[in-house]
Length: 194
Image (tube, rainbow, N blue to C red; front, top):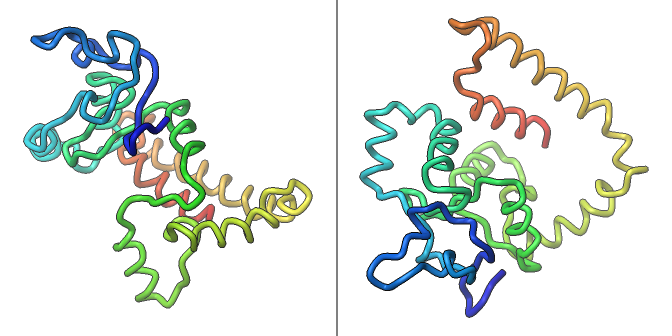
């Protein structure tokens, strides 16, 4: 939900640290009122740096997200002052409340990579009205079950290759059941699936 140009969340979704009273009395979340970005629990940049360098989360970002979700709740500001949303329900709410022409985060590295390779942009890298126009064209073909059925073989091949890769990585791990960098594997899977 948005009010006065700021994103608000309804309901008491904050953890106790965000709900505690303090000198100004109970927080908006404790009173059951919508919260602004300023009301969210936050991770300082130094905390983020400590976790990345000294606790070794630099190559286990998926585990860092799980840790911070347990510590700060399902929505918080991370060390880069971005809002992290860590539940499917909240993410769905954010995506459903996007405007007609959504603006995503900085995609300059993706765009530069695609420019260097001579690839065009897609729904992942486009923003605003260009994204909308591309999405309208894709929706005509991809969102109708009859039309999307023609891609089922390709999608099934990508999923099967991903499952094989996960089994291979698990067997090669020291314990025999762990994928050490699942975020990277999901990243490759999502790229291949597009």
